[in-house]
Image (cartoon, rainbow, N blue to C red; front, side, top):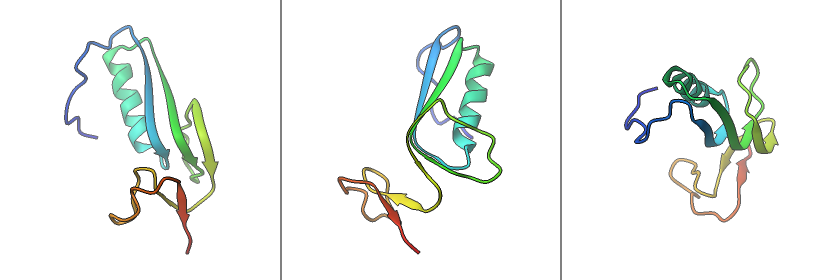
Amino acid sequence: LQWIKAPSQALADRHVLLVDDILDKGVTISALTGRLKDIGVASVHTAVLLSKHSVGRDMTVDFAALQMQEGYVFGCGMDYRGYWRGLADIRVLED
């Protein structure tokens, strides 16, 4: 994970909520959580719109609006190869 822009406010001793669209393998949220703990935040909580079941993942989130087993998700700002980002709903690409 590379920080493109560091947080603009001091976060030490603050309570932080990380929000992401999808938890798949957990690489991003895990790296961000570790970095925030290194900075010295008081606590880190995580929330995602969708948590996908990933075999072998030991990262969990505190809050997930939706759960799913497998599939590629698109719509509502998430795209599939540049298509369907503007859909008003969330869809799963079938095989």
